[in-house]
Image (tube, rainbow, N blue to C red; front, side):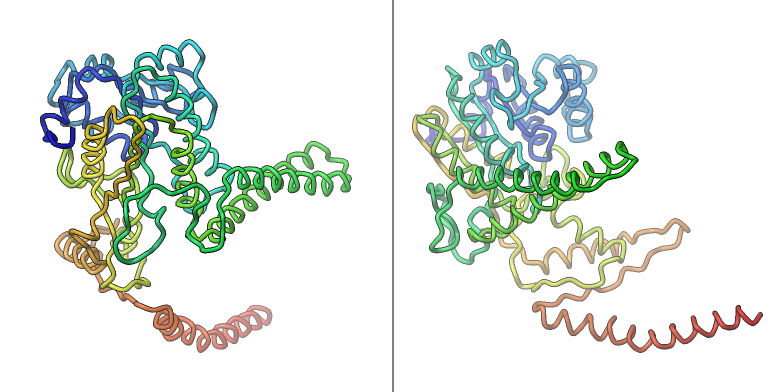
Length: 442
């Protein structure tokens, strides 16, 4: 297939195919669904697994969060009045969740789906860098396990595409090879990553925490039992949430990863490699995904993501400085380019039994963009298109300060904020005392 790859063969591949997509309500999932429907209207079915109470709720969620978005405007324009009918013929919303065995689906639906699916695309993930460890394990690790179990039941399955992240390789310089992560492998020398041990650790920590909390609550007495129960339950949830967040970060850094998200995504890749059997697998590792570059809507972005917070902070003039070396490369990749790479890779390795291929969908090697490119682009845009305040007045665009080292950043904070505050504080305190006395005697 690799020898005969072109746009026509990629588009033609999806004709008559049934595709299961997880994470379709997310940014990348939406782009993939729209792309397949637009370039290959003869796709048989696209099944979207979404979290919902039941099938009507799932259908409503897909309609509101996927189909009704402006991303589908080009497709909507193409089909005109027949757009909704086209969607209903091609898109099937499934109420389920990858954190459950059988994907949370009823047996009849699961069996019918297993007979029909040709391609599985797993984009579902919890992307919170510092999220709860137990939740991240459920979605990013156990979710992969449950999907593999289902994939093995699919008689006609030709491809399982799994979307990971380039940062499972850690923050390293130089050429990073596209290779699977081996069982037990970690980023810190001398450590061995045992996924089962991590799952047991979470269960043990939660059990110990619950025992300690129950012991503390039973030792206290009060006449307002209902009120105390509600208060204790809130405290337990808060304590568990904090403990799980801290544990995730602690374990990630112990094994050499920077945060819970990339750590659990790495474990998900390992589990996929162990459980896949002879299923053809492609792992796509994009770097920082940004807005659409070309089609269907250049510049389209869902919500506020990654580098967008910096741009918004600068636009609102809330961000006057930033700790970054402008010469450093920030590896970004437009969302539509990631989807194009995914589709091409699916076609290239479809039906290759036993294959496990890794692709890095990144830009830093061939077309590197530095932080200076981001700053100058944003600066130029807001000078040419200044923001207007609620009062109708133009908000002036100011320069932003960048500091390549923490030492320089600390000096800036000291001279800009600390020293002026230390000088003003005695005066403010004196004035407050003076006004207090003046009010007393008046």
